[in-house]
Structure formats: structure tokens, C-alpha cells
Image (cartoon, rainbow, N blue to C red):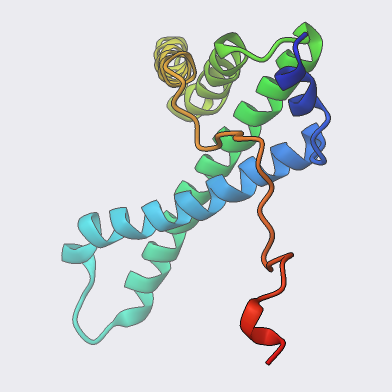
Length: 159
């Protein structure tokens, strides 16, 4: 294991914390996506001067999408972290395993068929592996530390 991998394993976030963050991010993204989908699909069903039924349908759709995305995010990150800790390697295989399990378990359960589970698992695994193998990450470790304040005194501050 090289120094970069060792530094990654020594981060302050535990696997459980990362899993919870993944689920929370999925919940937020899914709720937003549910709002967009409800706006597109539910508009003809909303009646004039009757806001409550339309609001209830929109909230149900937001909750459904939010919980689905939260489950996918939580399972994906959780399995990825388990695989990474078991293998002691940080590569695209961890994300591919996490993607397959998340897609197969969550979307397969919702679709209620084995073929849907395998298709969703393969699609999420391929997407995750392609992103990880291509080096497309949201965090780049440059080795620099950034502070919200300066550590040097300004020349004009003494005047």
C-alpha cells in the first residue's frame, strides 16, 4: 500500500460516517428529482382550486424518489467501503461491486424481477467502474491545506 492509499485510509471519516453521508446526499438529490418528476408528470392531474390532492401526490412522489436515492446511495457507499476495507485496495473494483449490489438490491426489489435486478446492477457497476477507472473524481488531493483565514500579517494592518 503506498502513501496516498494510506492517507486515504487514515481520513477522519469512518465507513459508517461515509455511508450516512451517501444516504443523506441521496435523500436530498432524490427529493429534488422527485419534485422535478412530479412537476412534469403530475401537472394534468392537479385540479383548479383544489390544491391539497395535488400537493399530497407531489409529496408522495418526492418521498418515493428521495427514499430510493437514499437507499441506493447508502448501499453503494456502504458496500464500497466494506470491499475497500476487506481488500485493502482503493481502485475501481470497489465502486463496481458497490454499484452492482446497490442496483441489484434496491432497483431489483422495486422492479420485482431478477432481470431488472441484474440489468440495474450491471448498469450501476459499469458506470461506477468507468468513472473510477477514468480518474473522474470529485476530490483531488494536491497536498495543500487551505485555511479560512490567512496565517500571515498584512503589511497595512500595522498602520
